[in-house]
Image 1: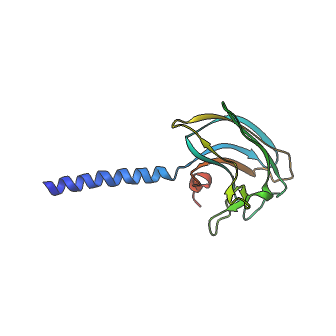
Image 2 (image 1 turned 90 degrees about the vertical axis):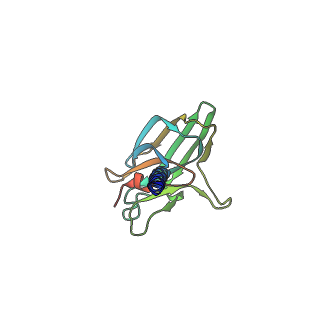
Image 3 (image 1 turned 60 degrees about the horizontal axis):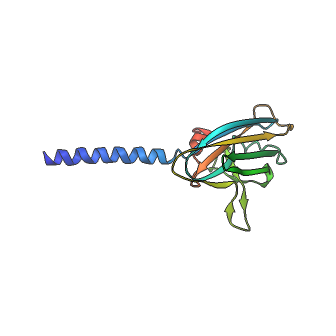
Length: 166
């Protein structure tokens, strides 16, 4: 009887740990999707408390790179004020990708400081609303190519959510 109770309790703990572990890898919020051929968006996005970073996901980036001179104009604001208001060239991003994968996500990296940029802290313990405005000027990109703006948490990119499974 005691052995069954211990095994049942262990099964419950393992199931809970598996659930927590799975949730740990869902560490991103899709902020917006923009056509690389030119588009703009303004929307509200809820972000959880903690360390947040904006990254740029592009399918097939490594196999069919877009125009490196493409410029993204970004503004993120909250009730407390503007978090950032900047322009980003694709050529200025550092790109991360899996081995044998065409998909990649880019982020701004300051080599002199050894830190990622477009990073900020959401204070408190509750999600907060932010206003995201993003645009790309028209370029000669192929129709259908897009960049997804993801907010990732604690430096962990949820690549399966970003790109799906290959």
